[in-house]
Image (cartoon, rainbow, N blue to C red):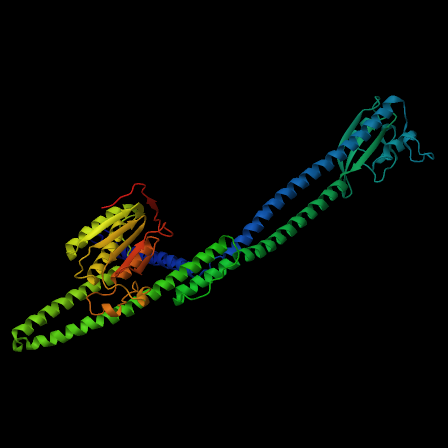
Length: 513
């Protein structure tokens, strides 16, 4: 029978392979999703735990290394000492039998005076002695009984005194190092033995104590590391809680824990200062919005009134029409100026221009030329050791232009020129207008503040506020004073850049124009 179409492949097989492929894809998706869910739900390890584990691991590494080296050195020393002592005993025994002919009876334990050669072997050390007679038979048993095999029997029959053989032997549950020394002439041999088990038991006990000490040190270091990490990270944990509370609730008036003089304390103070600045910025923004809403109501109300009059525009006389159109144009212009200044003020005067070396004399000349064109007033510039500062030229030009336009507005119709004086890093604009009342000197740079004498004049009340913002951004301050002989003196300084990077470099040469 011929196969199905499509190259003879079974559709059921294709279906089965497709089903298996889909199952594998779902399994991979489930595994990846499960792993991601596990990673999301897994509680991250705390810094305190990391510190404690690091301290414990360091202490464990040092303790194990020191313990191993100490045990190894002690074991080597003990084993070498025991071996050297046993070698000395064997050497003494060989010397005894080589110096004079001795028999098995000379090494008997029944010597009443304890002054025989046997006592010379056993007195200084813990050595066991066993006597072999001729032919290798045991004449006197040792305690314990030492093995006397074929090798020991050959030594006992050896005609040369001092020949010996050594080996390790298991006697019961103990291990001994046994040496057999020939007496010569086939008279027998003397066996001396040293128990190795005692040495190994001693080393085993030392090993157990070393391990116990290492475990105790690791446990104590872990506990000490946990306590020390708790002391170190406690303030970080509290600071983290404050940051999480601020991020969750948006409140900026939370108390920040600040204590000490270390890096953590510096971080706390910096965070507290940051929250203070943020709270101040939020308050300024809210106040700006409130003040802006209040100031915008007046022109908007006037615009709505005039727009309602446009419905009867054809009924109005010609002069009323012209007055209405002029009023609409003026209010639209005033509203545009107000919105532009609000945008500048809300942006905090953050100019995109980078900081650069700015000559204050050049700023004064350019601002005076611009104000002459816009106001038609005569403006003079006088410089006394003008400074070169690191700042933003466009912002400084804007601030000085605002002062000049303010002076021209209040000194409208004046006959004397408006003066600009640059002394070092200080700008002063002098006019002969009505001056500033004593009560208004401290408030003329506030946002939307309008003195009683200025409420009928055009303006938004933001020009001088922008001057203060620019001066503050350049590390200086704005000031106002009454001019001797009438008029006002308004200006600002460019400081040494506290927080702004502004630096003043006074020029040595006097200038003026």
